[in-house]
Length: 245
Image (cartoon, rainbow, N blue to C red; front, side, top):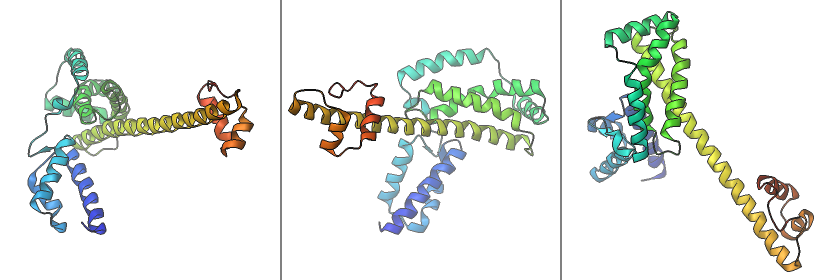
């Protein structure tokens, strides 16, 4: 692919993933082919696209079995949690719509009941985001918080269907933000660890040459590292870099 075609491919792929998510993490072969028709993918390239979508838990033609992507620990947790949810009972589609409309009107009791109705949906949504660095239990917790906030914010919606879409989107957004934040924190922790290791290694080398602990000033002068970087590394390590004193 040429560079501009590669950019177009990446943009279309993101649009396909977004469409699939809106459709319950499912998309048809026809929709995929239609999306990519402008860049004329060959059959083997389309096959790679389908493989990519399946690996990202997107069903082709029918919803993917999300349980296949879960660890045994996650499966055990969900089984126990679902048993708790079963005690809340279920409602019919008509009853759910009535609850949504009442919640939209600001009725607190209906809002509380609606939270219970959507707790199992939060569980199903959480499966879409498993394996991305956040515990399933934490994803569900974050989704439940978003759900609780969301049911009190439905007054501006035009109908029950629109309100339901808003709730689901809020839950999904909350889980995505949690994953993004976790990845950022993980990256920050990794960089901090690398900084500590770098300072510790340089301090060890210089201490070996001098046969004693070295000062921050000496290490900065000999290595060219800033004193701020060395001080930050000391602080992050809990002042546990042995060869610095």
